[in-house]
Length: 261
Image 1: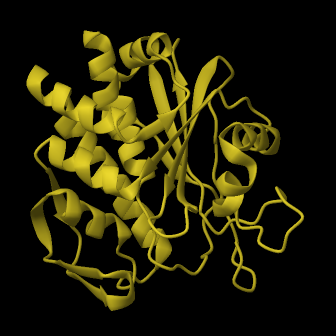
Image 2 (image 1 turned 120 degrees about the vertical axis):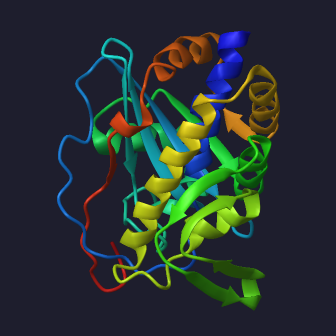
């Protein structure tokens, strides 16, 4: 049980926390080619999906690969506007695949598309992202620039100063959603999300037993997943040995074409 709690503090609260890095409306952008997307076979892969509050679209998609033999982990970000042939309908952005295919169907689709097996899925809401950040007492992040953005329609009001900031759940949501002021738009936001993930991971590494229990409670009440306790314990032992600074985090390469990616 203790290993399971630590698992929640790392995989379900570290990786799933990032999966809730939701987007303000974005325009697809070009990206550099992505090398070594997946480690060699013998890894466990978890598809992590974050759904928005209004439409249920999976606006954050991460593929986490855990190599138990090498005690290593890698994370691939998949832009939500990526077009994919998962439906015959007009809407083919990949963020609609979850609502169209369901939880088991989306695993099969990603496995077929990438040519590697996807073993588990996990889905989390933005509200529970905030709860998990609050459960560990917030996260210290070096905000790269002043962030100011207001959208009354979404009831979204972002106002963060540049420099080292202590972010609670709501401020963390604002940090990972902000994009309007970046020169490279959504790529800037994806970089910020990587920055937040590493900071969250570092905080998880110094939590005490009581903090882990609180974090586990916040995670388990808001996560839909087919990861069982046995698998959680096994994967948790690997994740405990991973240094966040050594975890490769890449974004799937793409090219913007007429509002698509």
